Length: 483
Ligand SMILES: [Zn+2]
Image (cartoon, rainbow, N blue to C red; front, top):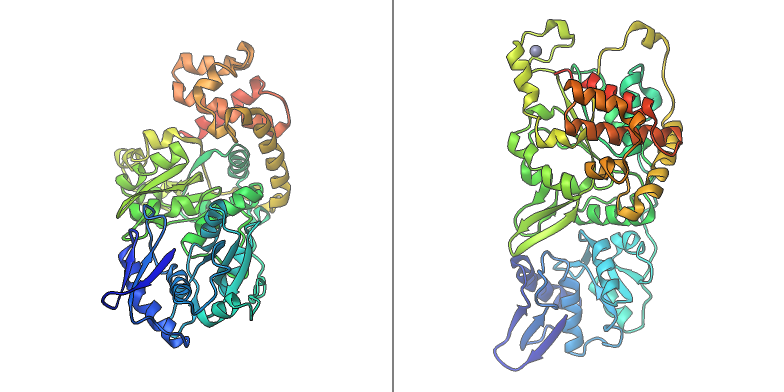
């Protein structure tokens, strides 16, 4: 950021590929400078945003423009400017207002060699998550000027008291549904995508909401990555800046492709798939979603990231999430299956929309039935903490096995690797050979069963699957695949 003040017609120009919203900043900056008791030069002012080839969007550059102008006109000392990044929107009165995306901006600034950041006071907590950068929080341009003059120390502690994250609902609340619970545990252990079908009110949403509580908490790197995305969409709580639990994101079935993948005019906003990064994307009533929207999930499912078009190119956001699809078995969706009034053709067509490339990525399909009286009598099941301990151990085993190949979970392992390099002995594979010969499973289905078998083995704490794991994996798929 550079400002020059020189002769010529009085005016204020911004160069360096600014977004229209940055050009609007001129009026705010001019007013803020004057209303903070400084002179706005009666000369030609040019502010160059650098580097010029980077898109500049939003109002976050107001503060740095104002500081650059004050320094160029020698109204403040420029001594501290070189290694400091200034972030914040300015109000007409000279107050500094919070902006989204402070965390990723400070991370980028550190990579560019900055050692100090002055940010809106409301965002101090997220900025201080970045190690190696001194953070100061400011609430007005006046304060920033006083800091530059050495007359004031900027606070770097959060004024908002820390809040506790809302508790993730616990698995202990779920009555019955042993099969679905077990399916969710396997899904968590191997990061497998899941399709749950069952009548409305059977508990599909209740179970899905409990998945983050049995997934391992996020490591520090993942926490920062996830927090950065939520900072960009402006959804961080000031009292609880760092996201340490896997996020749960549940867009409505009427959501647009833009809401799901990201985009929008001007700033390309991350969508649901990125907000669910390293967490859970839950699509309830997924058979009601448009085929185009469902199809759009293929890219993030394959690549773990999503490319979002924007005014001057493409933005790329991480989007490695665990997908939980839930659907009613048919359009009439009765509470009890026997009351269904749909024809067989309608029933088949309803879920048929989900078939093909999307379902190829879904390793687990589970059909939920109303709990019987016995299950209701037996009360509640294990707590999330107990399940999470097993899941965490299983995930650690998978990381140890696959990390040299760049995979972190069983679900990421390509079918070819399971069939060749990590081929299991013939006696272990026998159930799959039988199913393939009888046409009871397709080649892709066989790959999915192999992935699940590795996860079952990891959950048992053994080195590699045995025949029974493979047989169980096949049954797990088979039972759900009755449509
Ligand atoms: Zn029906």
